[in-house]
Image (cartoon, rainbow, N blue to C red; front, side, top):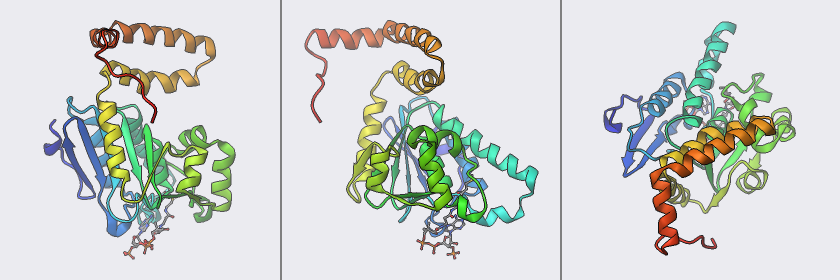
Length: 263
Ligand code: 1HE
């Protein structure tokens, strides 16, 4: 499906620039709070990416990346519907993490609750200096439901997540960078350009390498070491057998390929 013909709710705007697809949360009057329609739209976007998309840039319109779950929808849900709702988020975010192409998230302003869970499903996170992170679920009498218990401890550790939820602690952009929530810190207004540059670079990798990094690496990290080494050896052998890999290695050996440079 071409990106332009994808049927998305008004809370999401999609466009494509070369090999980079851009998905923008577009509900700034509600601080990009995530209602069911938006979550379903995110699922549609990530399951229907055109084949020529090599990377995705995820960002938010307005002053904040996302205020998390749309709290106005919460009142009506009973216990069974609550489980279904959380499973819907799991399904949609799984399509981000284990989808067709790596995702770079650009974070600014509030990145809280489900907004932080959404960011955690991306592969690379860039923060502008205005970004701040919190898990207000603890004080609202609820619990994370968008995969946060699984993804966030892997980024920042169980103890930090516990602290955030128990005490309502907020981390600044700089602190988030130090503890591992993000791997790039950009000046205010410069996050999008940085994220786009990274997405373009990612899209320039071979498809097989990006597949290995997205699909094999996080799973190997969860395996017992013996199984991990075996899967790694298989993945390494498959990747290097790709004709594109052979041609890139030849380019380097014949002085045409890029050298590694200092940043
Ligand atoms: C919302 C939401 C929302 C704003 N659901 N409507 N998330 C939270 O607990 C965070 C709640 N939001 C906030 O703390 C603040 O809104 C912000 C710090 C993000 C932004 O503050 P500010 O002053 O810029 O905006 P505002 O005036 O608070 O909000 C503007 C409008 O957005 C207002 O609606 P209006 O009709 O009165 O104009 C707000 O009600 C609305 N709004 N945030 C619904 N979250 C899968 S489980 C995940 C569980 C969670 O994510 S829990 C965490 C929820």
